[in-house]
Length: 120
Image (cartoon, rainbow, N blue to C red; front, top):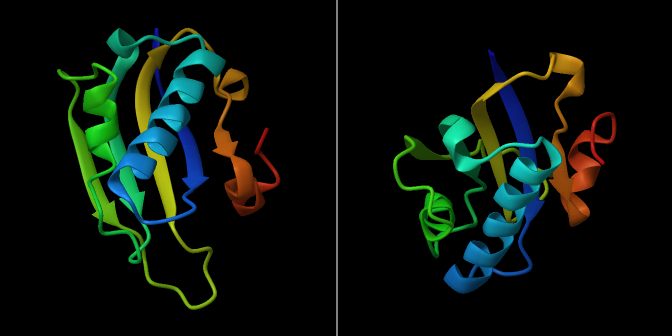
């Protein structure tokens, strides 16, 4: 078993807590499913949100999914001119039997444009 990092992102349509919970929940679910993981495989999860998101903590979506005993942290993304607005990014550290090439990074919806080289 190795420690691996899984990346992902999603763009929100609006800065609203329920919408954030829905979109971030979908992102986390996709990260787990596409990598054959369960919550027990999570070591820690970092979330970043662009400075235009204020309605809730992205980590709250993880708690709503039942991820309650995993260290989570939220931070603000750099405020770079011209950057895609309303984006939540995730970096999950996991235990997995997959090699690095076998990890599936998940970029949902418009956020796929952030990493065309690895987005599904």
